[in-house]
Each structure stands twice: as structure tokens, then as C-alpha cells.
Length: 85
Image (cartoon, rainbow, N blue to C red; front, side):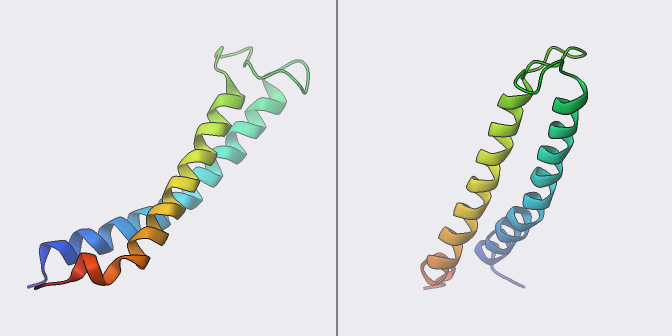
């Protein structure tokens, strides 16, 4: 049976990799909403939901960066994390 650290390590890498396309899709979806739910191209507040769509896009971009940083850090410190000693 694999070590719990190994299972968590690979789960975090896999989850981070799978979430990046989800967040990209969220950005694209929000940009479509931004186009059709606002009056002017510079507006950020949806006329339908009242949601700040620009804030949503910024949060999704930040989440993509967090996923990438998580993947990089896990790979850089892989030996230290998975050390079974």
C-alpha cells in the first residue's frame, strides 16, 4: 500500500492540473457574460445578476496562478515531501 504522503502528493498535483482548464472555462464563460450582460464594453457589473464580472475574472486568474505555483512547488520539493525516512 502506498504511503499517505504519496497519495496526497499525487492528488494535489492531479487536482491542480485538472482545475486549470476549469478556471479557464470559467474565464471564457464570464467574458461571454461580460459581453452580453453589460451595456458598455467598459462596464463590469452585470445588468442581470448585479455581479462584478471583472472581479470574477481576476479571481479565476489568481486561482490559475495558485494552481501553477502549487504544481511547481510540489515538483521542486518532491523528494523532501516524499522522503519516507
